Length: 448
Image (cartoon, rainbow, N blue to C red):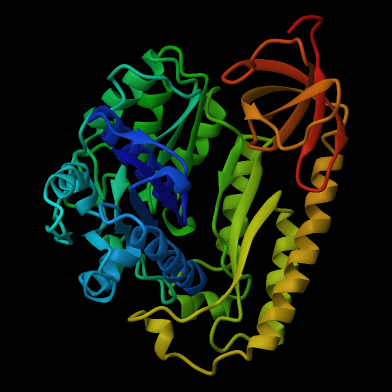
């Protein structure tokens, strides 16, 4: 059966989609482009309103495609599926499967059943009290990427005022350390050189009822010790839970990359209290300083929300000040939007949309100027680049390849058209030019 997957949202959703696609390929299905597919899988995100609305727009288009093929159908999974549930089945006749965040593990077999019974429709929306292990699809034959994600937990217990994640992904459930390590060993054994550990709040790994006494710092040590693993990353971290031992890990583990995504959300103590973040400016800056001492080449990125209910111009100015003080390499910034059922939905006063848009533009202009300066400071340095594939930038007579340095910065490197395939290769590169959001490099050695 030919299928395609459309993914919205975070890296965890991307990883979920990759696992689901691989599980279907193991069952003999073929992953194709949207115009060739007969089964369309939509993995959804409900963290903000805009991705959710994009889902409904996409379903309208997919409905037209299914109307031309009576055997074609759509499966909707992820956070919006958990939130809306069987409403998708009631509203869209061509949607035949709805699976929530815990239902993902049963989705491959459900899809096979639906193909075998054209009249059947299913929903997989039940939640589990423990982390449900997924079918092992990575140790089976097939190509392995140079980089891979490994999920270490599910859900979140923080209930930040603006966030719907605890409602759609459930409470925090940590995976058994032995299972995490086994998956990492399999991946490295198949040629993966870089692993990113994933969770809604990796810093609290092991602190829930499913914990075994192994905390996140110890897990980092164990994964980093796997022979052949050249790079280790993790995301996402909540500042209130970051352990001094995790900070110290950046100094003691040479393959732990000097990059941390540390969501700030606001630079105003008043707004942070209303958000329920449980840290303040001083605490955040203390973490930044400790990270700098542990790893002087540390690069920080962050998440920011503007227009949170009650945010004043003074609150916003404090965000600008803190962004400038920290000097984030890059940031994901968004206007606040109400999500159903969260505490902030009932908070006021709401910030006028035009005011929020103006603040977002000012914040992004500041970030762009900081990013340009950070990238410009890299010019002249030599670094290792792990190549991911062909770059979107191409030129006659040369082929540009895209990779990342240890800090996660995108580096594009030209190679003669007759040169070798670079995907998955690690190479020393001299950085020669800064672009708006990336760097241009040239090989530092004499051969490819």
